[in-house]
Image 1 (cartoon, rainbow, N blue to C red):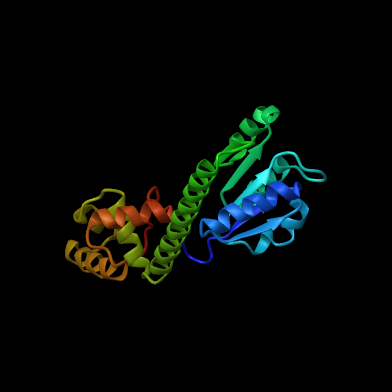
Image 2: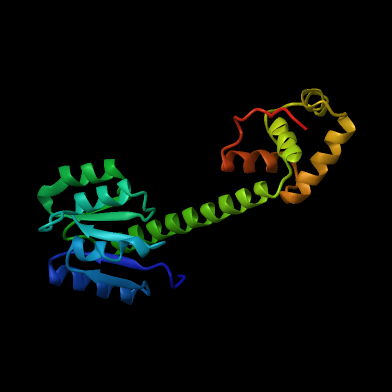
Length: 211
């Protein structure tokens, strides 16, 4: 796994935390342990990827409170909660808030490792999607105003002639702009452009007037 895929284990029970750290390290997964949610919060702003494993019941700040804080601050890191036998209602609450999984103590080692690997895959997929979206926005910013208008007409499902009429230019000129923006967006087809438009959030925009 890439080095940045670090698992953060948060549990006030030293034995449980150290056991989790040993299990993950043995499986070749980088890990860092914290004895409290508050200690973890000190480094949370700098986290860009990875996975969090947190106990539900902890003093000062519970796992539920930590999860809620992560979600409220739009920090995109998957969270797995671990619970005791009497904490199923809390685990369900955690899932509703946004936890990707919960595991009961004592948990099966293979089940935990599978859950962690699944969470790390989701995190990697999200990071890749963010990078792709950022690249699309960069390409959109490099389009001229007219190219952007033609793009918006195309993804709205309009024919070249309709776009030309809306913009007061010739269909041939629309074709030229279309070829230019396909090159700038590195799109191989109209479907590529539509996919990019969805990612960038411009699919429902209508072409602007003006030349």
